[in-house]
Length: 393
Image (cartoon, rainbow, N blue to C red; front, side, top):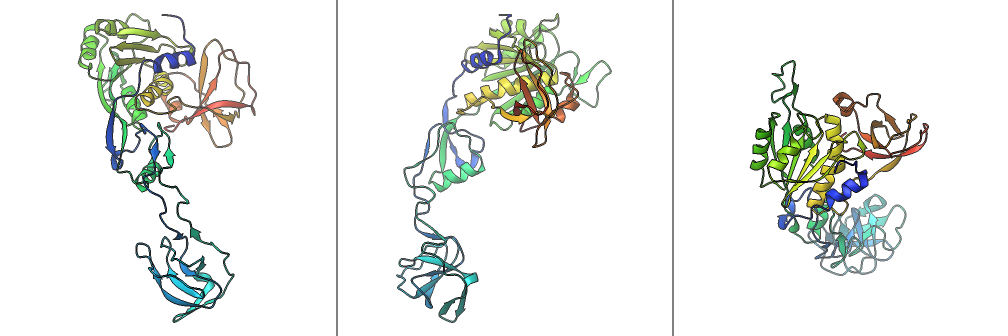
């Protein structure tokens, strides 16, 4: 159990421990950030009729034309437009039967009921949004596992849906532990440090709809940790920070054992973040993260967020890299995959000067992480390297 697991193997083992949570119906107005449990199919055609894309006149044939009425959005012109006739029309209004193009108002001159062309004659079909050009009834619009953002919610509503099926929200407990942690940052003794990891992790999780409870900080006492773990039996996921290593006061592993959890794997071949711990208790999963904030952030990004995405039904739970040019030389790596905090400026990525796993100032300026595979040779500036862009960087 003490062998270092390669990143890919550790992520696979973790994701294999869970499956999508049970489904529930959610109103689309409350669905932001949720994931579709099934493909979204259109229940209606959009648009249902030919619509004008501009303000102007729906015309038939050559001019001059006689204006015989108006078509407004929500109030179509009911009659047929014959040759040399026109109907005043607004953007989004139904194009009357018989009209074959839209003459924009900037190219038209109207005198009472007479309409004349003052600019270029539009070609047939110009400025008309044809019925069904966006989508037709029965078409698959979004695949299962798609995250619902603002545009996807608007699409689903326009397609005729009032609600969607999605996995229920995970119930999560985040546990800070350590004698050195002070719960009140304004009253922190010299031998203490303000507890910040739980708040950081809750913020990282926030884009995924969850029910989150924070506990702690809990002192380094086996009985205290075990008691808290017993209280969190209803959670789908427990996240601990600190106490996951092998020191005399690292008590997460024995506390988990005392609370009835079984260790799944321990230690990943990554830097920072080696002392990662994963355990199970029935269907519940426990992820023990390192106490150093950068290590906690990195392991949460690589393990906790993918696990939660899997629970809520994301089609692609793992984060993906893109290629970016490094603007500085990168040294060779050892036997662990390294994640280098960096700044991305749109032209390339620059590693930050401070890479210590406790350095929060550098982490706060990080908007990208450079991935350096284990056993990599030195990389010169100007070379493309794999990079994770951080939404909350």
